Image 1 (cartoon, helix red, strand yellow):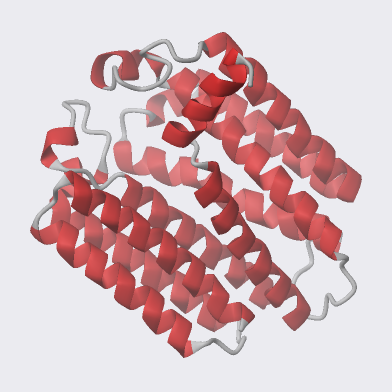
Image 2 (cartoon, rainbow, N blue to C red):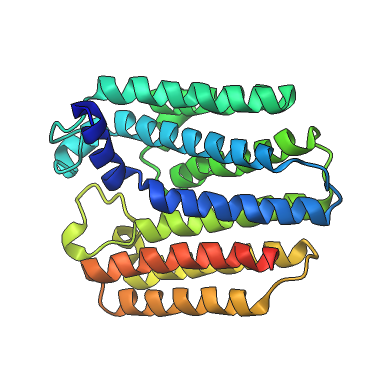
Length: 288
């Protein structure tokens, strides 16, 4: 294994956990397959779902690298232990990798459907504009709540573009639209859980949810987003496996309770793991 490959392997373990992201992406694809079959799209070959999984991972890596570039000055001060800050990888190396993944994302969508290819190019352009924080994005950056809502909007658009690639239309029944909102809420749930930190991990930049509303407030947001996702899935009209839903919610409640009562580093990691499990089980409820 080359030096670059070794360094990128370490980078992904710290900043882009490929194993976990592959599992969560597979869960999204399975629930997407379920909702499309439910609404009458029976003849979509499985290889298209696999291709979209690769495209989704490529886009997420692209946006992770965009974040690294955009936040470098802040991370230099508040997160000096991160890979870029300690010299494990350079911004130039990450930039080349990020744009390559952006190219993979657009090419896959363009091959699946010209409309989704055009939409994916627009989404990629938005992520690049966000990197340079031009116009209203510069105004948004110091506004923590609004900024995070706008940035998370990319994941909703990503899901809609996936539907477009598979169905080759934007004229969908309400079940598909509601499914997309459910995926977005679950994605936001994981993002908030990821930023529920222990007190000794907080910085003066206050870039976590726990630094803004405390441990109880931040787990409250995690749970509210989970309930929003379950409501959206129920609104699709699809039969849901209540056992999977109850298991996912129960595991998340346990992780939230442990973290909120004593927000240590280990409790923070436990909450993040519980959020991932709830994410997978909630979507599995559409499949079984």
